[in-house]
Image (cartoon, rainbow, N blue to C red; front, top):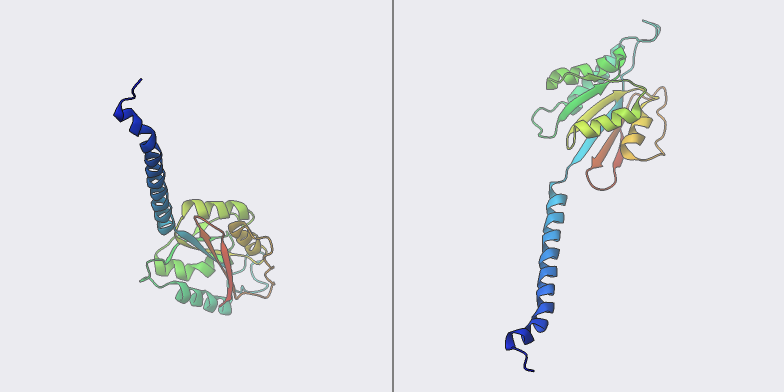
Length: 189
């Protein structure tokens, strides 16, 4: 029995075809992965404690002191550059007057209405910020007892040190990439 010539070549060409398909698929996957990494963005969340409040006035919800108003103005100068492409896109505050007043100068400068949230729901706030603001820069004005929990929920890190009651200068910057691990920087202003 004689095998036709065109059938004799097929077994020889089949491995070459499989290699070509595999290489092409690998190139497509590499291009897709590179595109994904280049276009992926990080969400940056800046967290500060409210500025100092007046003591002994208005019980549980006092207004800012003169020092607190100066610190709120300083925060607005620090984060209020309207010429930047990645400026603060949203501001989250607690329902307390001191939190809202700390964010007010920056909110006015940027033309943003702060979102008032429940100060006791750190996990819900972290999820909301990451869900609603991918790739944006967000400011959260919280309290000494809430900031570490919010930072931990945003970053996935458990060892966030507490904020001392007398500390109004600590700033956390949490960068949450779409792919990979979050980073936390602790600053003072």
